[in-house]
Image (cartoon, rainbow over all chains, first blue to last red):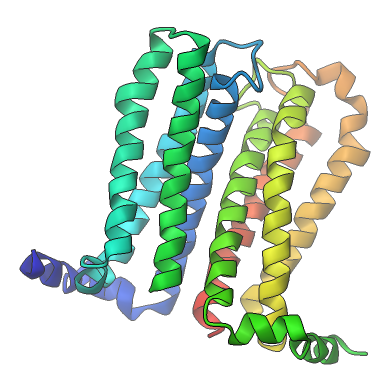
Length: 154
Length: 164
């Protein structure tokens, strides 16, 4: 693992980003834009799943619309996050707060794809959809909180 | 009083000293500021997408606004409060930072864009509230909002990397 992280940190892409303050800052900024897009989509979907808004439209329709924004945001965040990680792989790779963030990211993504999406498509009952929305939002906010804690403790 | 001397005064207030000198204050504020901007802009984007006729098109524009804005505004309050506190700690450095100035210009333009939408464009909403594709003025407001808030976020992160 240590060898892989060391190799990653010395790849051309990682050193190019690391050597340029502008590239690092732009990558970090795009990472936040991606996260904003992601959480916005999750919030809108959660409002519909919990029955707090947009009840005149089927939950599956709102979920399908917001899913595009959520996955666009997730793709941007993961790509830029991987770039940022590569520049300091040996240090960040062993950071426990970062590992918690990654665990929450995997959990939130799997919940979105394997649980939430299927339950909405199957037309689960309102209580189940409410719980799904709340758990999904909590997981994504947990990713954001872990990201902030990472900044805080770094 | 010039803007620079106002920044110097602000930087010497008790609150600014706490922000600057406490071990946890600054990073906690940065974390809350980032969460605030992600949640507020992330939610606002969906209203902008509705204005553009791209998302939530089967919901009335006024309904999208009414349902989303309370959440966006709550996050905006967190963003502006924490942003103001962060600024107070490093006001003179921020004032001299080009990215900070661009961010402030983009913030003001975003505010003016929202004001124009509410004062002018929204006055005729009864005629296009349920239209899948709102009129050009509404689409322009939505598009400008997305661009300006993206600039605010981009410049915000540039400040973090160039000011300290």
